[in-house]
Image (cartoon, rainbow, N blue to C red; front, top):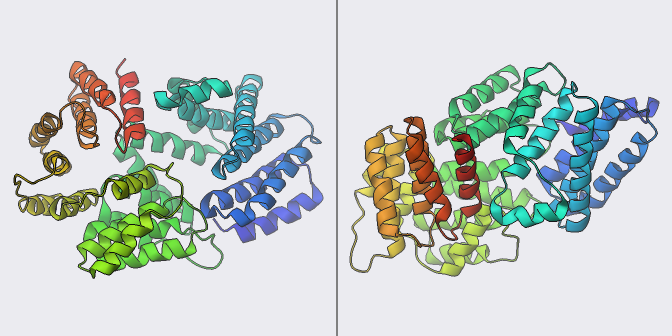
Length: 452
């Protein structure tokens, strides 16, 4: 993530060999990473033009596995860059082209591991898209299977190459996130960060895995130990992650400062609504004046995209205009950070009354279930997941019941009860729209495929 020194080395290399595939590919990775992380619209035209120039330069290089791979990889980078900035037609064209090019590279050079790595990621991404996106795949002429994607990634991760670590990261993170293999993800992230403590990408990886696994203290430790300095690419999103972790901890003032830093430094549009929502929570739970709470709430509704689920959730909260329950909100944040005993103590303060919202009546048993699940008390977790779905019925427009069914599926799968797991995953898919339907459906579909 030290792009300045890297670009200087590449400049010298490309001056002597301007059509060499390896430095062209690495130079493109630097530009793509900058654009992806900064989302700086003022850099878009220059960086995309540089990507197109590299594709032209590669046309002058002799055909080889590396040349063809670099061309396909850069084409994919170009497509993703264009999609990120809403150039949908051009982005879709280049994604389709890059995907088919990478398939061709694997067919021509089946032993070339880097191509299998990228093709595996593409196949998994395409194959795991929810049903609502299948029309887009048909329009683009893309078909793939999750199983082929995982197989290609496994082959790439098992072979020595310059892309071995990248292949291993992709495979392990997919297994950690989608197949409930947290130990694998934690072990890899800890090992990589220990081996290269000056690697900001590995520090992010360690922070991210711990956050997903509800290990708030460990995630904060990774954030505080991350390498810093003027040589590193600025990654404002790390401040947004830290703000979440501090919110879980109940350090509302520090959480507010981190999110304000994120909003000040980030050049892109994604996660801004989510940051405003978290600022609202920090101000509200931290007892700030009602004017500050209202200001952050209004900020959620500022113009911006909602294609990221967190932003969509924040916007839905704003339009729903229903006050959150302070006890349930504190408990949710504590559970997200892995503070499960504190969450159960917090939940003892919940008292349902005739005026209690239906949403809150559904959320209360769901929060208990997640806390018990985090503590390993699985019988109690199952009971409250079941209670969540009973209170919700089949059509509640909230994510609690479908998530409860999904978690029951994982519990049944871990217990070796495949028929029950299949029933629970199928039930999770049947619920109508809710804030996290895309990711919930993707996970349920992948779990059902694994049970075949």
